[in-house]
Image (tube, rainbow, N blue to C red; front, side, top):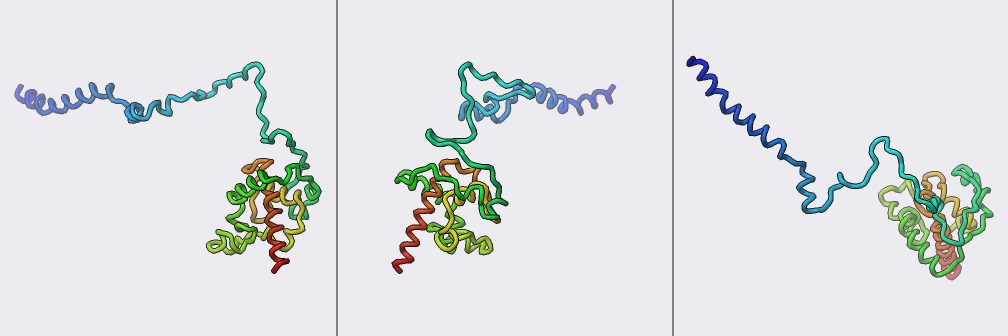
Length: 202
């Protein structure tokens, strides 16, 4: 009898803890529920698909979005070509006409995109020796755009290089829109003209 009483007293604290845990567990809530009161709806409550759920049918009159990203007045009339074609001279795109007029707006947009996507390797003025990447990665020196062979390249060739790349230059066709690639071409041609004129004066 005494042994049973001692055993009961010994286990009583453990029973109390277990009971407290059992009562408190249902009251617990995830941390995101607490944050929800501060930050609003949690991401857990966002509209999303359940596993194997069918997609919603488009509304009547809806028009599918094309992946080309061409502004009004521009269409993609470009033959298929690869980086290998560019390495072999770019024949498929050499004679490709530039559909974007050289305007102040085009040059301004081209400069923005060039500074964003190209200047790190080709330099701010098309001189790869001024490229930001050069001190840290000298073996990655890019082809100069404002001198030498680049001056003889057509608009279509430059467009092709931006689109599919060549050698150590990656393709940017999936990152730079169709029209922005032509804006960059217009800007590069302007930079080439500036540098060529400066060289003749010097």
